[in-house]
Image (cartoon, rainbow, N blue to C red):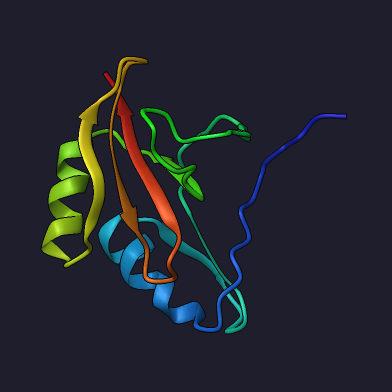
Amino acid sequence: MTVRRIIANIATPDVAAARRFYQDVLGLELLMDHSWIATYGSSETMAVQISFAEQGGSGTPVPDLSIEVDDVDEALAAMKAAGFAIEYGPADEPWGVRRFYVRDPLGRLVNILSHR
């Protein structure tokens, strides 16, 4: 057996609220919309990963999601321009990533990162 993909399912009473953060700011495509569930994604080939953590590194809380981008500073500027409050960073971490934490409109803590 081979795991083909991992999908994060996030419970929310307002499915449409995710669009501004995940589609409008991060640029993910709306792949499926049945009104009760909306799935955002990308045609990029991605590695299958799932992480388990006691803390988020550098004494931070464990984020609900981690999203790797090609330019973390561009993502940071886009989040600020869209009015999302940055909760941590930006920081160049000793394990080789540059990252920041931001809350999505659903209250989830999201780690936006890129490898240096």
